[in-house]
Image 1 (tube, rainbow, N blue to C red):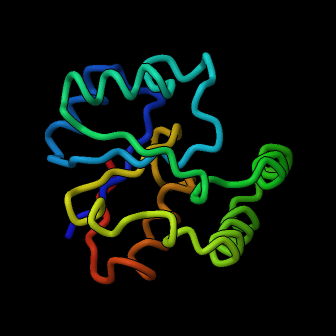
Image 2: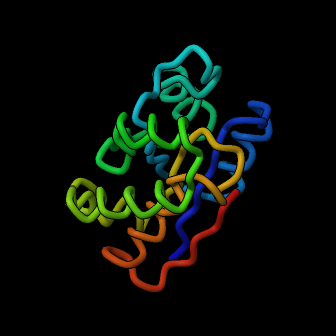
Length: 145
């Protein structure tokens, strides 16, 4: 099984939707805390739901159980300490047990975790993918687009 991740920042709408289309996924799982910011452009919740459905026939899911807390984000923005952020985010996931909020069949049908960061290196979507692999889909290949 493959689990994809993608960020929309620094991608044109064409690049973003083509990456999703060519991945073959059937579901986009939005792991952002806030998905309606005017800075999100084509990736604002209502626009994204429309584009995914009408352009690609892909379903949209917003699962805040995988999103970092406001406090965690604020601390990271203030101090930039990625290791601390990563450690605290992992603790948050284990406390929330977010795997209970997702139907495994969505992952089996093909899913991509969505966030804003342009790369997965310093983004919680990478950590969420690792968490899902360890808790729900052992052995899944995680591919960052």
